[in-house]
Length: 547
Image (cartoon, rainbow, N blue to C red):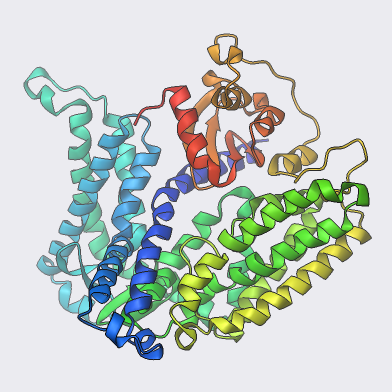
């Protein structure tokens, strides 16, 4: 029993940290759009290829305008550590979130100031210069070390812990001004100084260790690539995939490259630095992204087609719209949660034993074809055009994705059709005649695994019981206001910490339009897809949550 409780606690802790990552990650598609369009249309190879020197050549109006777009996108990717520090503090602060974010901002700058000064004044500069690619310039500091998002998360966690512990602290009257929320930035500054000293002497070893892990995966060849892609997809149902992939995208685990005289770490940073520099995109870096395109654009729509063809004839009309809309979402944006949770409900083996394996082999194939197409958010058609087609075949080898997409369409169709018919899986349209045809959801899977559920009542003190608005229904579905400890909206889901998970009503949440719900310990995830960006603020307003 204690083991399960510990696992649930760990899940809840990782969920709370992981949800804070979504704020800067949600910014990346826009930043990537600016950088991708700006870099693609101002790249010398693109201009020369299409003979556009008179329109897009250096000195033209469009070139100058697009260069501004390029620079605006670059500033986001160059300062992700700072954004993550602020985001972590903002997301995890119990109260006075703005003060917590300011504290993290102060702590981050103090950490870099201390680290940079310590390198010089303690005689470390000469030694670190011998370690190639470690020293860089950033945030106005010269000869410093880029700690990436790790440094931002590190100082953000420390600052928000101090904030939550001391934002109500009281001092004697003579120094009472420095108490309360005024103490949080001071604590953040002190934390930054201590953190900077630690980083000055510890980060070189961490950096070498991280680089060594990336080297190990690189030397593991296709097995390493397969392992990365399998784990990445297998974590999707738990909502913890962000914790796994982030080091590969944003640290030396994903590789190191020297571009335009700068040392760049992290697969995503390398890809976009090469886009900005007009260079050929490294397939070694892009392999952490390109493997999604064959599955998102080809595989999942084929799986949906197989479900449609396997549906009972009298139910095909009912499921056609459901499967078609989900397929279009997968193709265009790479968001696949409705289809993936349907697969998971129909058969866990079909999801983890077949789908995730096929997904991992896609990573091997894109490596074999040396495909250099990256993305900022997900592997849909829009990202493929922006970061594959527009930069040009010579730089990305995007044409090699076409046969892979077609191959994965056929592969997923026949594998899924065979599995559905062979094992009589209850995919949409194959339910018993009295059951309604619908895309199965994450909470359906959890309910199947935990068939017994507890009857619950709404807290009698909650006025929301008499309110039939969507936010009120969501709150009631979560057990009432008094049952909710924290609530945050990320890219596709509400991430909630509750006091008593037994009184969460999955059926009521589903009636509000939720695609799925998963409960693990006190951590609850309610999936709405991209419309969560409007639902989240409405629920927060209903709860009276203030920044």
